[in-house]
Length: 145
Image (cartoon, rainbow, N blue to C red; front, side):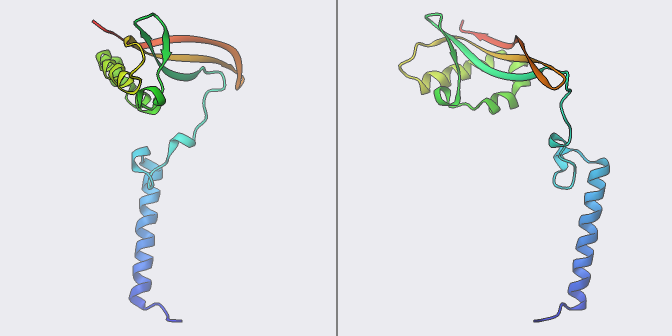
């Protein structure tokens, strides 16, 4: 077995000190974007035990008046993509026309959509347990002109 040279030991100690300092600085003053040197708060905090739980969905209304849940299977768009850009859809609901077009492309035999909306279902929670109640809130809607 070969022994580590003095220079090699010095490089390892220096690298350990640099990475340790970055980790400490990120922990004290960092944000999620600084990961892996900052805290990843997404898993470090818990939800309010009496706060409502958010469940987002995208739905459309076709030309026959039928409500269709839009999924990755029938539109090619994942729910996470919609949730990740939720603010953009709320500020510019006309962007939902692209979701209608994606639905038509992935579901060629289906009736065209005349409306697309993002709906948040707020499930009631008390003492960290579901109450069985909910309320729906439409946060963005687009209607075909």
